[in-house]
Each structure stands twice: as C-alpha cells, then as structure tokens.
Length: 377
Length: 161
Picture 1 (tube, chains in turn brown, blue):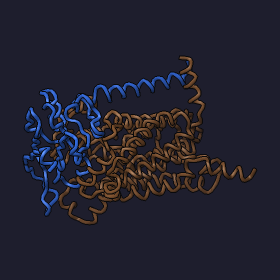
Picture 2: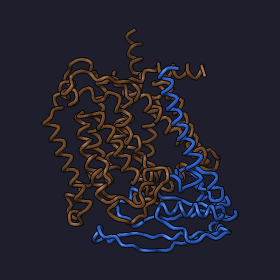
Picture 3: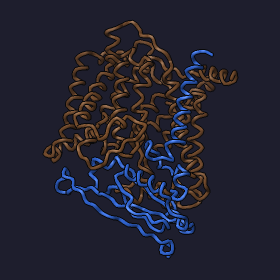
Picture 4: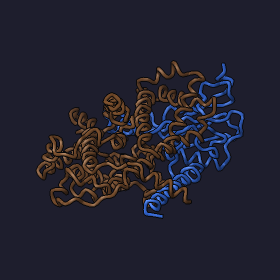
C-alpha cells in the first residue's frame, strides 16, 4: 500500500497543470470549434421518424422511458445546448453552464446511442464537465468582468482527463486483444478495411491501397502494433512528456484510420489540443496583442450577437428537420450540410488532422528546444 | 493518506467498475447495455460458435461468412451515419446456436432494427428478415416500409469452387 501511495504521489508530482489563461483560451477554442467547425450536437432527427424501434439499454437513462420522448423534448435540449455553447464561449456562468452542457449532451446521446450505433465522441461530451472545475472561465470571460477577483481553482481536471483518455485507449486495445487480433491468422485491420471498401457507398480514399498491398501475412504486424500501442497508453499517462508523444502518435494513427476506414475522430481534436505545450507556444503571461485582442472581443454586445447566431443556426436545423418544403431548398440544404455535421464531417476532418500533424512536433515535443539549447552551449 | 491519494483511488475504483461492467456484464448479455461488438468478436462466450473473424476470403478455414449488405441499405442519408455494418460469421461444421444464444442474437439484431427469422440448428445457413425502410428518390422526405427477406446460404464447397 505504501508503494502504491508513493507511486500516486510521484504521479501527482508530474506537471500536468495548465495555466488558467491557457485553459480559458482553450475554452474559447473548444466553443468556436464546436459552433463553426463540427456543429453543435443536434438531436432533432431522433424522433422525426419512427423508423427504428426504441431499445432501452438497462444501464442508461433509457430505463425511465418505454418509447422515445416526444419531439418537444429533443427540441428543448437542442436549443438549450445551442444557447449554452454561446454562454460557455463568453464565459458567462461558466461552471454551471459547463456542467449543464455535459448533462444535456449525455441525455441526448442516451437516445442517440439507443439505436445501437456507438460513436467516438464521448470525450467531446464529457470535456465541459471534466473542465468545469479547472478555472477555464477565469480569464477572457464575462465572469471575469462581473467578478474581477480570481476564482479559486484546483488542478484536478487535466490530469484525470489524461487518465480517462489513456483508459479509453486501453479499453479499445484490450477489446481487440480479447477479440483475437493477436491470432496470427486474424488479419483484423485488413478485414476492417475490406469491410469499408466493399460495404460503404463511398469508400475511404486509401482503403483500395490497403486492399492491394496488405492482403498478406505482414498485415498481422499492423494488428500487433495497434493492440500494443493502445494498451500501452495506460502506462504512458505516468509521464506527461511520454503522454504527449502518444497523443502525437494517436493523431497519426487516427489520420490513417480516417483515410483507410473513414473514421474521422474529429470530435477528439479539442482533447488533442488540450495537451499541447501551452506555456511554450502561446505567451499569455504578459499583456500582449493576443491577450488584448481576445479580451476586447469578450463583451456583452458580442455575447448577444453570438446568441443570435446560435438561435438562427438552431432554427435552420429545425426547419430542415421538420419541414419537407424547406428540405427541397438547396441553399438551406447547404446550410444544413454545414451546420448539421453529417456531410461536412469527412471533408473537414482530413485538413484539420493533417494540419495538426504538420505542426505536432512543435506542439507536443521538447526536442526542438533541446537542439536550440545545445547550439547555444 | 492525503486527498490526492483518496481522489486517485476513487477514480481508479470507478475505472475498475467500468472495466468490470464492460467485460464481465455487458459483453455476454447484449441486452443489458449496448455492447462493443465491433472488434472481431470481443466476446468469447457469445461468439464461441459464431465468431467474427473476418475470413471472407479465407476458404482454407472451415468458416462461413454471412455478409449482409447493410442493415438499412436504403436509409435516408440523414440517418446513414448512425448505423454500423456487421459481418456475421458462423462455424461451418460447428453445432448450431443454442436457444439461449439464439435469444441473444435476436436481441442483438433487434437493437439494430433487424430480426432473426430462422436459424437452423445445424448451421449452414442463417436467414435474417429485414424490415427495410427506404425513401422515394423524388421526395426524400417520405419514408415507406419495405419488408424483405434476405437469405444467405453460403456453402463452403461452393465458395471453394
């Protein structure tokens, strides 16, 4: 027990802390990324057609329902989520808003997932909740204008987000191990790609390449690499520098996933960004241009404009979901494509992931600094 | 023991509980929580006789692959992102599904809007009835139900030929 306690203490000595200013900047990035890139979660489609029978998983909120809730329920949570993202962007009642956002998205996802498809966006849903206590509303926020004194915070969140992500990756790897990926004749990756190539209407760009060159016993090697990489994540969390290397590898891994299997993992981008070397990349400790310009944008008039934009966005999605006439209007269709996420997803995932990968050595690795220091010495 | 240790052990306990639910409760009973079947089986108990092992082309093995096209091939594009495609494998010379397993399979398919219509006890075929929903191309807002019965009878010898 003593050794375990010592280990935990040692782990707590690892510097996972992120400065409150940087966390506040991350909050703005998270909201802007959600509102303008991947789209605010939309649950309106769930009860527009009773095409699919409702299934109630026993370990979920679904047990309280015998059928899907009425459309009004989904309208309410969707409009609330839209508004709350505006609140969070401007840091207005940050803590309760962050908690409410996660709770509402969890409720929406309960019904979204009740049809059987489990997506990869659980960290996107949980991030506001996990960061609610981190002090990410202390700067660049309306809360700061309302209460200029600094609010007390602790460093609980980021460290445990790393642990949760590592655990999630471990679970993914462990499931693959149980599923027989390490059997020498499984060729699991190859047949996953095969599945994508043959069964999906528009196969991912590189799946045919894999089909052509990986239909041999060497493809088993890829299975091994993936299983060990995912399981190894749980050990990597012990040290931040190693964890960052694993995040970088995850970026590359998920990029390959996207071009071969069509899985974008675009909802995880904020999580990857959370672990960049904030202090080294963006200087917010002194009063500079960036500090000033971000601060000047966080005002009450801008907040109301954003709320208006989010309401308009909601009504567009609402109209497209419920009006057959509007569905035929091409401009609105385009808007739906942009805000509704479903179509734009694959076209934005590729450039975003590629950009982060290109910048990743600077974002995640200490190597460049090390070289500079040796030159100086 | 300080607060760091206490909070760590609470979190560790939660993760262990999740691990236990995920691998001990969820997997053998698809009806309890939505399972992660995607990874090549992932559940030795359930898939002992019908294991997903991606051997569609591997005719050297005594396995049989049931390859449904999609659960909902004609589904509206708005919904098409919400479904996963599954490949079902059955051991060619193995025994058939037990009643218990058949119930589980039925439950599993039900979650995905499909029904197990018939499964012979000496498995050389599996039939899945699909209540397929599709839409008119001229007006994608109107859905209509089209019930189809799809049957895959894949004989290993035929496959080898």
